[in-house]
Length: 364
Ligand SMILES: [Ca+2]
Ligand SMILES: [Ca+2]
Ligand SMILES: [Ca+2]
Image 1 (cartoon, rainbow, N blue to C red):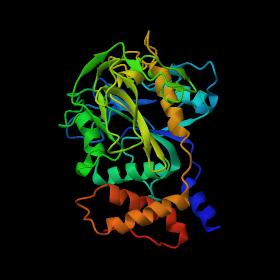
Image 2 (tube, helix red, strand yellow):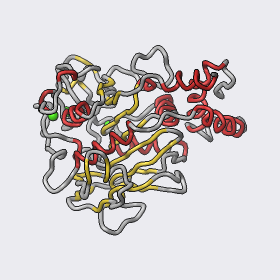
Image 3 (cartoon, protein in one colour):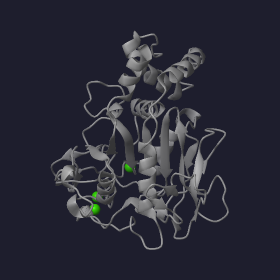
Image 4 (cartoon, rainbow, N blue to C red):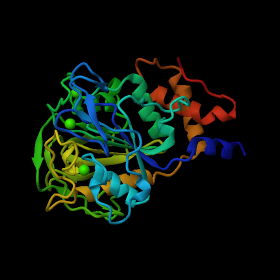
């Protein structure tokens, strides 16, 4: 009884895919939004997630795309919505998923009942080329979301792609999260490079969810100024590569990686071009990478999205057991030495056991 109550609380009614727009994903020649009716956002240096008014010309996506997703049929065009990720979003709707955006003035939280777009309400969270560093609280939220069964889709771009000129490009933004505190909980690092790959090498295993998923088989993913990835099974035994830059497969020439963390699943790719559908903000020069000839970029992204959305809801009692062990260890470690993992575990568990009488409290 207690377990089922906790499970119900933790699982919630998750089904949506949420696309982030709080990290200047529309800055410069990028338009990584699923739909925007307004193009009045200024995300240049000093404006953080964005300001409205003078100089604001970038896509300003609302939480809910318009027209309504309910009117999408199997023949609806991607231009039904206006954004360079509209093909991705319309494809997911056709696959029975719901999609929405965390607008520029939204907050990345997990377990915050005051935030109507708290990550606990979503199954998958997409960050396509985030251009602003995450706060420590946001890093904890992302790891807690993952640990409790969320699906996290991270997309980097090439080194030197600081589109909002705030001093951090997406490689640095993602590595600052992935390697926070010297840890590497997901087992993935973005390499500081800039690659053009038109003929990659894909995992031929039928069990690979990215190259052999529900949307089809992938034999080639292309990069147009992207960064490769390094994976470490020592850091995360679950991490795997799905695509490599060449037929020589190493742990440091990976183009698409995936794995698990707690009950959650993650996918990371190092280029924003594959998801670009070529139409969106008329102020931007966009290229259709989704349907690129000779590659299956859109298929890989759809497979990855469906893999993330299918993460099983966490076994709460098992997680509690893990958390007790971790909690016991974490008590003896300082917050400075072990951020954000310790905090992430504890905030996640605090959320899961809230209905059970607050057996655990986070370390403050
Ligand atoms: Ca733009
Ligand atoms: Ca930046
Ligand atoms: Ca589009």
